[in-house]
Length: 127
Image (tube, rainbow, N blue to C red; front, side):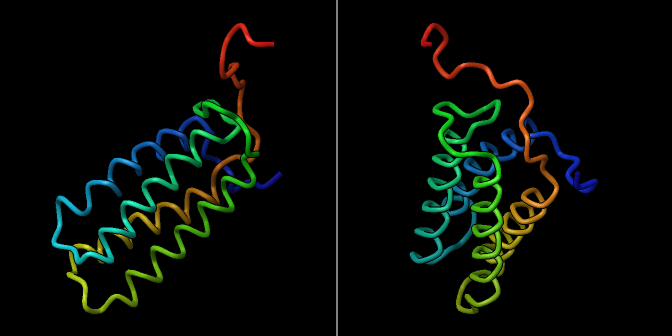
């Protein structure tokens, strides 16, 4: 058991869906070029689809295991951090927003429990 995995998957799910809103808001809240707007909206879509498809309390379709979800979150977080570091032509506000969400994604992927709590049926009544 990894003692650093202290974040329940239910809370991770709340972070997922909150991140969707924050990533989607970046193009409308801070000055950002077209490439950054596209990246932020694409990342928001990835987080939304990943959350909906994961086998955890807040997943709807429950296809992917939590371990795969966390690996994708880690990859996305490092991509956001890399982009924020390298996009020197971008505004500091946009780079800061992406870097912050990248750090949150990486840290959450490392401290979230890999085994969800009780998972309700996606569609009650379907057996």
